[in-house]
Amino acid sequence: MAAIIKRKSITLPVALALAGLLVFLPFGSATEFSFRSFSDDGKMHHSLSPYRWILAQPEFLSHLLLSFKLAAFAVLITLLLMVPTVAWLHLKAQSWRPLIEILTILPLVIPVVALSIGAQAAFPSWLQSSEYELSFMYVILSMPFSFRILDIGMQAIPLKTITEAARGLGANWPKVIIYVIAPVISGAVAGAFFLTFALSLGEFTLTSLLHWDTFPTWVTSVSQQNIIGAIALSVFSLAAAFALLLTIGFFTSRARKQSEEAE
Amino acid sequence: MTTQFQASNKGVPRQGGTFIRRNLLIAAPLIPLIAYLAIFFFWPMLVVLLESFKNNNKEWSLINFTTIIRNPYNLAFRNSITLGLISALTASIPGAIFAYVIELRGSPKLKKIIASLSGVLANTGGVPLAFMFIAAFGAQGSAIVLLKHLGIDLYSGGFSLFSFSGIVVVYMYFQIPLMVIVFSPAVHGVRREWRDAAKNLGATPLKFWRAIALPLLFPSFAASFLLLFASGFAAYATARAMTVGNIALVPLVIGTLVDGNVQINQANVGKSLAIGMVVISALAMVPYLMIQKRARKWQQ
Image 1: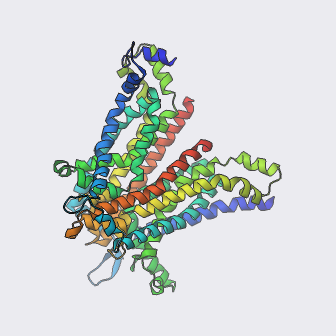
Image 2: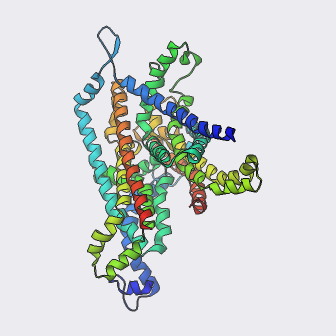
Image 3: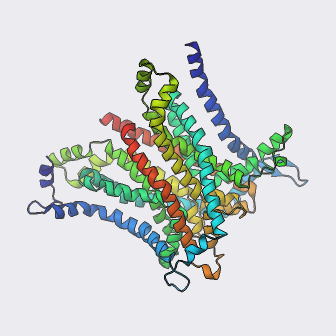
């Protein structure tokens, strides 16, 4: 018995320590590396100058803003397209749900590289000369996830019952959507929002193959002239991604809690 | 109940609507999504498929496919498949063990933190990850310098981050978290009560594993392995940031073709390579999705 207790108390810490070390090693190294700078005699010391260098680059802000703009647009399309569709699937069109489920998972089956080739071959030049082309494609890339988040979120809520109740009490459809449906699915919507946003911000493959320059692709081009700058940018973007995804975790767990309370 | 509700709805005709007409009216609000997928997903893929069967004179031909089964493309496919398999193998086993330990022993709060962390590493890895590894294990990397101080010179042992094994190591950093994400629900599905029941009925831990846990977990493990294979096989960003064209991988080869380094007689070779990737990826992803769908039934 004592042996069992002892074993129980040790496997988890060992696993966590090992995983922590393995995650910390490159992250810690990169953080150390990102503060490196060299004085005139070639000696290395640590300073903030790589980060100052980043801020001095006019491309830094312009690419960051472009990435944010494209991600925001992708989020907007995703929400306008997916929220009403998934709500309708749950309210009225249950028989169509299996079909839509299969259609929306397909972007996960097709490699992004292959889809990029397709976009380049198929889209008319007026579309390919607009950077919003990327936003339209980000919507496709995040669709397997955004559909599932919304689907699971709405599955947990008796959407049909509460909608019928509101309709029965005399609310019209706009009122039902604003005052009944929107508040109960807010957690799932927030999850889809942040996931699409994070995926769009970090997207590299499609962006680079369609010859656009957003923040992630700019980081790669920076590495060719200033590797320390590129590493500092990587530390910055991974830390930002972590903060963003923690927010997703927070919202989705809140949504789960909400739906548990609803049941 | 249902008919009553539909009768009160303006969107559905009150009288006379045949079954098919009503079904089509119900499907009408789904048209925007289906149209969007058709324009931005199915159409591009259809164009790739059709043009991969056309030669430079836009005539139907198999020339692109006979080209890609020969070198250098053949080698690129073999490299990519090997990379997918090895990175899936090296990531699925530690990932599964880690997921099992966390699910069995971790508190709910810890599980949530691990899930978020895995999400970051699995989804946003790519380029930042590659540069972090250059910072740690490049010739001037912190870990390399640190190890040198301790008397270990990793580079004298022939190690290079910019080699096949280097890529496998870096891929593990998004593959293991991916494994944790997809395999945890399966471990979670092995109910604690089953373990207790087996124990009460006299099963040894070995017997429990052989008769209950492994048969339950194996399909999910196999499915996760397939997903990891597809992920490692098709990954572009990390490989692009890490290699300087010294390792032929299919996504990188497609990348250079897209960048305009096209030989004149091979205008559509990139498209046939893309179709080749789709086929291999689908061979892994379709069984993955089917097993996952079945497994979800008992996991809930």
